[in-house]
Length: 370
Image 1: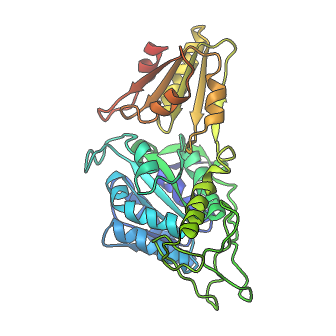
Image 2: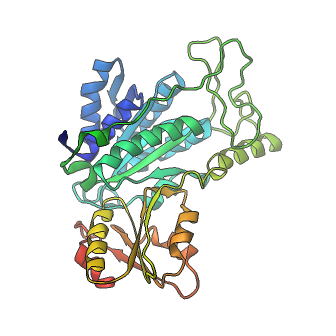
Image 3: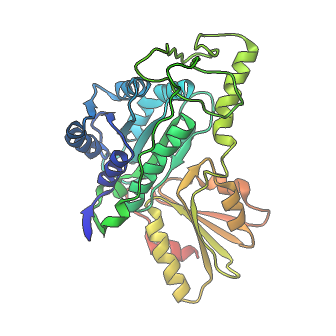
């Protein structure tokens, strides 16, 4: 059985199958249809969907909903992510599991509301204070919009932190025909909470990077959270040891398992001298270009990134071995190319194939550089 569906619909399906029961957002192209679909579907399933007065409020009520027992998601585009920034930091500091969808469009500021781009790749990682690691997943097909949404919810629950889905205008707005069974397989995970009879601290001292259960919702435990540096009870503190413990914990949550977070598709070729690296919507042009190059007798390898932050350094380092020329295909000025350049060996040439005119990169553009 097959069906006609776009990326935003697939994201909604993935969220609902993951147990999402709360959504808040503000209308913004090209993410608005997620808000509309959630508003239609969640109330029929016992959930809540809110259109808030702005993006700042959307993030705030999602944080409050999670701390009240909900499993929450929000969705926006680049200008909204700018407004989300402060509350993204709040979710990191208060260790709130939450999924944030960024349907990217061309920036800066209002930019091109209906124009495709991969504008926010660096901003998603570094767009809030502190410099702490984030998890950003990037779907390259409509089916991956579904599966990576499920993965985002699972990681958010496991690590007690916000997890991003970096989609883009063409991916979320273009309808394609896909097999219905490619939109199945997500299992809603039960949330670990501390039994109500056990002693409770909002942020107990323990091994850095090891998340701890949320409170049993409905009492009797008192939950106290603070976006300031805080102690185990959630009180603001200036104690050096408490602050060091907290900050090392937030840093270690992602970094201690970053090799486990790597999600790529590597298509090597014997004696290939050219490697093409892509993510998101550009993968489709790269796939066509690689197939054409191989038919013409050229040995070309391909690496598709589905996890872009933290940087999948092991996979990238392996794929870079032995190649002379590395092409990084992006709908921006080369925001991810600098990460590849950092890992490349002396003598390896890293070339960006970029487009910022609101049009998609074509297979022909890529073939010119192969």
